[in-house]
Length: 96
Image (tube, rainbow, N blue to C red; front, side, top):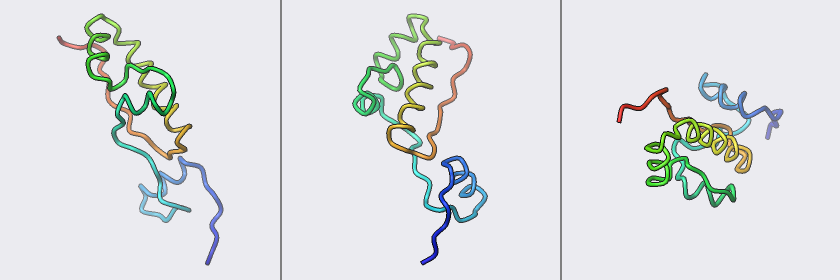
């Protein structure tokens, strides 16, 4: 068995995108449930929580949602030791 040197999550993910063989298969998620994120992180979140997120959006708190989304994704990557997470697109204004 050959041992490869360990690489960073970024290097691992980029190697896989380039169809190269990384040290292991990159791990991560394309979609994360907001309630699950709250349980994993041990704190409330506005991200992907349905009614709570919509109420914040309708209340003009778009920037709070975007900030919370970023903190939630970074927190999940660190706690779960993922190599990647898909960050959703967030337009600068919402046409409601």
